[in-house]
Length: 213
Image (cartoon, rainbow, N blue to C red; front, side):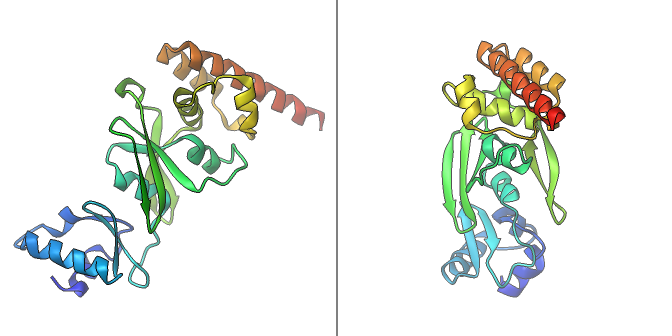
């Protein structure tokens, strides 16, 4: 395979997998050798085994971090502080893209950023949707209510008012309170139910503050 052929196949893809190049009558060993050479030459980035992205100036599409996160671990969705920042619900910039998976936890430092994956049980793996994140690119991202509860689920003491205050939550009017309560109840977790009540109280306080302005 020539590099021009690679560009024809994956030029419009923000991220691609080796399997995309093994369709038809190709020599898998030759494809993998070429990928290794192009990686060494700086023409492509290897993000993890079998997952690549074109390097500048060859890329036509700048890979959105959420799309990269989804590609790094199949069956994952972006959540926790990363999703909350996306929704404008915390003021801090989050340099590490954090996702949730039912698989093994892990962390990848790539040329396209740092990505962390947190493990949750299968019965808690829900509450996400596929969103357009940039220029037609789409990624699986937790809904605001689930992103908050994922954080509580995974962090010790995250149901305590002091922890929630440290997050400096904002724009809580974007929460669907009924969904938040339902998710907490369905979990069967007293910790998540306490957190939902505390978050509801913060939302009420925020709303009352706006009314006085």
